[in-house]
Image (cartoon, rainbow, N blue to C red; front, side, top):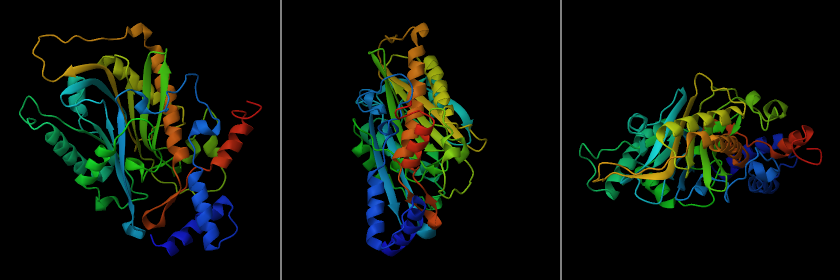
Length: 394
């Protein structure tokens, strides 16, 4: 987008924010300042649940997990591209050779996550996890296979075949989805950029073109410590919900927010990935995945019929070598009667991850001049104070 069109569109956007001075320099400064003010939900003083987050409050607090993004944003009008890919590397070793237990839960299946039949059958995760826009799935799947083949030259015979996990949400409101402009090289770049520690959130990677609850959505993450021993982390690609559904810590925020033109479109999807270092077996991970759905429900989302709400959970607590000469695996598992704290951690981390996707995402202008506004943090703080969730009266 050229500078003049950006200024023109930004002016329209900022008029809703209350900006009255429309000279170019003031608008540019206002945009710059507002982008720098995006915060995570906890940084606004809004603390969700009772458990303590990990050091980065991210899925990467589960040791060994890395996250990488490639963000693609260019063009304007009908040809605007606002898309990307996010990759989760499940542990620091070769996931193809050293598998992890995993499970899957389909809350509402109007969407796609490749590889789930294999996961359901074997109970194992054998590839990285990729998140992207709907029409990019084939390209990302091809790139994932090429990457795995490059890292594992012997891959391919009947006993060593693999099905990459690629999940999608429809980013059509902001991006020219039919252009399918993600390339294999850009998928490789996301893998190369993957790192532990802090995770970039909001309008990045696979979340670049996503909207949620009538505002800009995208990538969000959070974590919780469990009994000083284990960690639960969640990462989401949020593209779901209607404005009037949004609730934060029980507060009907979506109904309270004023202004910000909202085009009511078909609610789309959300992909939710939960991870833990607690040694869980596939049947336990299935139950953990169902608790992710409870965290989603705390945001007010009702999982519309046209929404693809797909959940994957995995554990790094057991490594299952692909090449195993012995007849038995030696495994660890938490007693099922002691698993409830992990459920609580999952619900809390999911709730917070979705809200981080909202509060970190900045206003984005996309296809056909469509605008997805970043949720107004000043109004959000005022509303939460009104309901005594933050401030002196909480």
